[in-house]
Length: 305
Image (cartoon, rainbow, N blue to C red; front, side, top):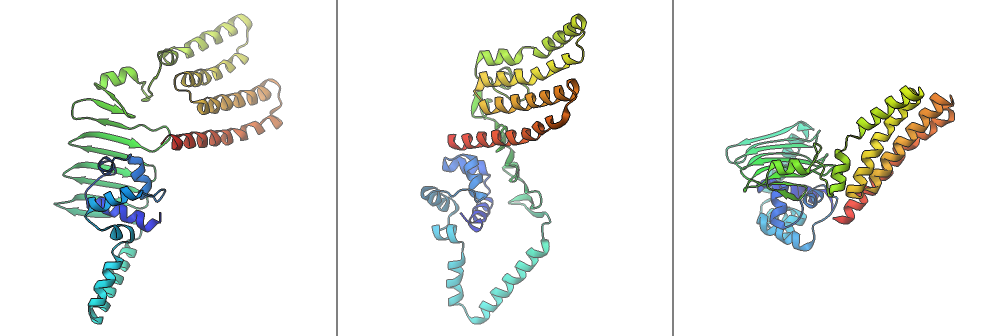
C-alpha cells in the first residue's frame, strides 16, 4: 500500500474521532493491524476496505484514490476562472503547509477538543470529550484514558498491553484478572506472567543470595576471592533458564547464555591468563547474536499473528 493511501486512512480515522483501538474494535481486527495499515506496512483486505468506507461515509473510490476524481468532475463543470482560483487556493494552502515545516501542528475546537501532532517525534496528543489519547507511531506506543478505563499498548517486542474494564477487571496482554491484586499475584514487578508453577517458583527463588553465600565460602575456605567473582555470571543464566522453563523462549535463553558466556570467557582470558588478545574478538559477536535472536523472535511473533 502506498503512503498516500496510508495517510488517507489516518486522516479519515482522525476526522471520525476514533483511536486506533476503537477502529480496530469496530472492524474486528487487532490494533496492531490498524497501525500497520497507517504505516503502509500492510494493506486492509477487501472486506475491511468496504467496512472502512461505510464507517467513514465515503465511497470506496474516495477511500482508495482520495477525492481527486470528484474534484476533477467539479472542475470540468466549473468555469476557467473557478479553475484558476481553486488552483491558486490549493497552491497557497500547500505553501502555507510547507512553511510549517516539521513544527508541531495544533488544532483547538470546542467540538473536536485539543489535537497536537509533532511530526519530528512522531507523537500525537488528543484531548477531547472521549478522553485523553497519546500515541507515538514511531515506537508503536499508545495510551488512552477515557470513560471506558485506561488502555496502554505497545508494539515493541517485550512490551505489554494493559487496560481496565467497566466491570472492574483488568486485562493484561489479553488475559483478564478479577482485580489488580490478582494481577499482582500472578505477575512479577516487570509485568511478566508466569505460565507454570515451576516457572513462578524458579523466578521467586533467591538465587543471588545462594551465589553470595557460595562466593563467601570459596573465599574463606579456598581463598579464591578473585576467581569466585565469576559466580556472578550464573545469576542472569539462572533467570534466563527459568524464563525458558516457564515460557519456552529459546531465543532469549540463547541470547543471555551466549552473551554471559562470552563476557566471562573474555574476562578469564584477560585477568587469569593475561591473554586479552585475540580473546576480545568474541565480544564483537555478542551484538550480532542479539540481533539474530531478536529477528527470530519478531519472525515468530509475525507468524503467530
